[in-house]
Image 1 (spheres, rainbow, N blue to C red):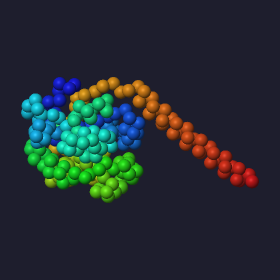
Image 2: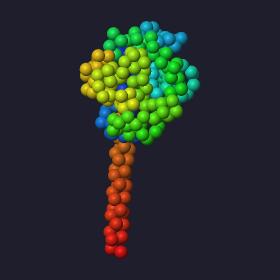
Image 3: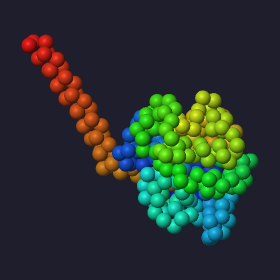
Length: 248
């Protein structure tokens, strides 16, 4: 689907993104996922009031997310790289595939009523760049860091928001019993991972795609090959040194 179908997206829907940047490719590789970023759809009117859906020409679709880029947060009017509401059309320019998983209408009013309260009570939440968070996402182990000082991942912020709005645990929301918000990764929000979720319908629908950059794919492959080459060199050097020490 293209831009003409944006009005089919409603506030509270899960947004999943897949991009060509090396960091995103690596994240997808190590988390065994087609997606490397996530956010939540939110329609805002001219007064920045949350709307259920596109109610008029003045309503604009935003991505409620926490990110490591530089976008204009509509709530503050300043360029930020932490949690905020960012214009959907600007966000999607960074990705080649965008998908949506619908929030069931039964729960939509709750999200609309509480999402802004969550934002205001967590305004200082930052994106976590600690290596332990990446290891936790890869291994599904809860390497918790200080949420206030160190921040969270995009899908962890989503889990916190949904838990706040629905007064329920993310393990119950997605019907994945062992899941904790600290170990949430993009694929947990997909239908294939959480088909029994009573909160989200499925499967997710692709509503905006563009060809993946050949150059980016080649850059990713080249980087992986370079890493493997360096590892091989290190192994060979270590073996030679050990053999030399034994000979001496």
